[in-house]
Length: 202
Ligand code: G3D
Ligand code: MG
Image (cartoon, rainbow, N blue to C red; front, side, top):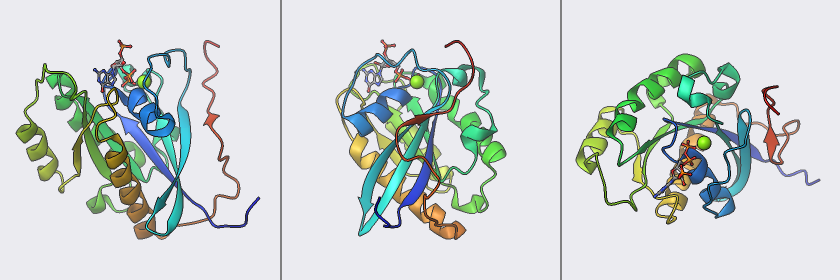
């Protein structure tokens, strides 16, 4: 193993069921769009190494496996998150309205040390569809009103803006980690694809 210091940044993806969270993660990490993720059980994460300027970081991207339907993700999911990605579906106005409660949930559960530097990025997904239900101005205005949260319109299906969005997510997460002053080595953290077991249904 190399002795290189590698920063591990935890990123969590929140939003209503069906907005494309799993698809976005897979498009970004594996460059694939399929709909064969349904069998996953428990919280699941994927790691991706990225260079930010001259710094190598590992993004550990946490996805849910359907528990978001019940808004019961558990504190381990939120703990230590450096960036929270809020996803909605541009064709589903309700999924946009619910961003507010996903955001509140994150703030309550993760209680970031510097809430004024809120580590959020918002993604309006499925822009490849022409049945848009949320005007871009409305989404942008909401993000502006939340400490100028970065906003991207994406398509996991067509790989539109996914790379750009995750680059912003990585930068945001790194800034958050640096602000908290707890940049460390990832010595004991499993860096391969991993799972936390929910002990259910396997
Ligand atoms: P989730 O993880 O937020 O629950 P998924 O969402 O990633 O499981 O996606 C839910 C459905 O939306 C899937 O379709 C998936 O293929 C589709 N989807 C995800 N992203 C996009 C996108 O960018 N464009 C379009 N057109 N569809 C997308 P199914 O049919 O399997 O339910
Ligand atoms: Mg999913």
